[in-house]
Image (cartoon, rainbow, N blue to C red):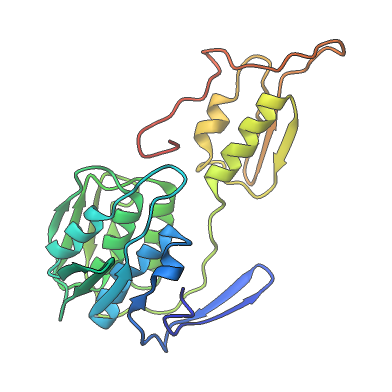
Length: 256
């Protein structure tokens, strides 16, 4: 997607170098957006940087239909003109301007999209009922290192004071907490043992906390998480089950 937009992307092992100095194209085509729904996150930055964007409407995903109406509502509040035609969203604005935006429901990608757009908007933007996920916090931290003025990330109210430009930085991507939680729970259910050597204890707290029950081991330390299922006797062929006390719980806009 980034390469299609004119960005130079080079990868070498675990390192990826992104040079957006040559960003000139403003259209994210359907054949790419349909493959990865998160491609809609180019919408806000393109409007802020190039003053216009044309992005295909994303389809559903494995957890069902997920419309982007809150993304569009937020951009419109910042002053963008939005049109929908032939399966594409077109957004344009000579200059985005700060606004107070309330999300009707918590949206992670919506919060991220509007936060990125507001970074280069004129004035102050306040996002209320914003997502509080670790990914939102990580993005805000990277933007701040690039020169953005953002406060409140990790709470339900985020304030962004627009700046004129951003600068390049080096950043480390946080581990995927959903994948971490999946493998931890899998170990518990199968009676196995899994060690994640690069997991983040703070962002993996829900499964880490919920797995610590009698018979279920889940030592959590900095940069290292372990999950061990209950021991079974040699003659046992039954599958381990979670009791009500050990069954992981879900929080809105978090793990479910």
